[in-house]
Picture 1 (cartoon, rainbow, N blue to C red):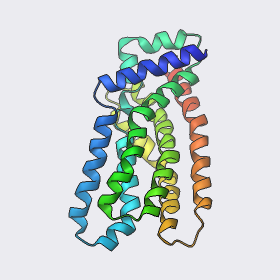
Picture 2 (cartoon, rainbow, N blue to C red):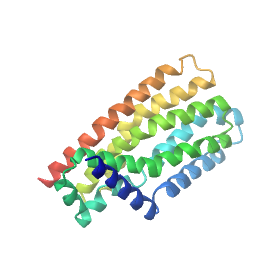
Picture 3 (cartoon, one colour):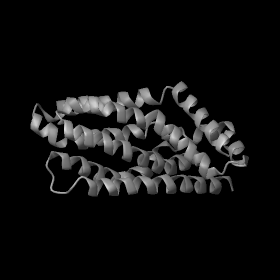
Picture 4 (tube, helix red, strand yellow):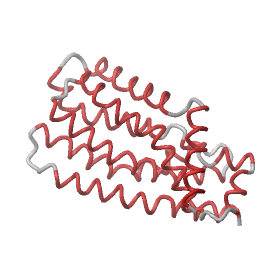
Length: 223
């Protein structure tokens, strides 16, 4: 079962990078959001430093959704999903492998790019460190919650909009506590550990519930 999981993970990683919608597109979108925002706000460096974590997290949230609508839909169209459903590997682990591959191809490059892009928003070194840590912990929650929307997108044709409609409300708590944890580095009254532990708990819950919910949706669709 472990071999099957790793083989599926490697397959999805190859497909993600070959399709051109993985690391490169997500980082470019992330960069576009960060670069365009200061032009809209103006040259107020203090304001940019104050709202910078929220800008970066919103950009990371939107960039993490790229490619999620095709996560199961591409396999459903060519019949690979039926083969995976009959394989010894449970659908929950299939969904988990696909979610992990998507995070490695899309989410992890965002985490690596965030410290560089944070300099464009005049963030202090302490804020950059807190931001990077929250992205490392929080972006998996976005991806694994996105599995639910991706499963529904595979059921309905042209269901790509469903990913945003279903996933965005679910990710609001992640966004709130991630920005709150980063804001503590700017002199907040709440200790960093409090919102960060809640964010970690949300990510762990998403890691468990996301694949289970996605597998249930796929089973209902096949029945």
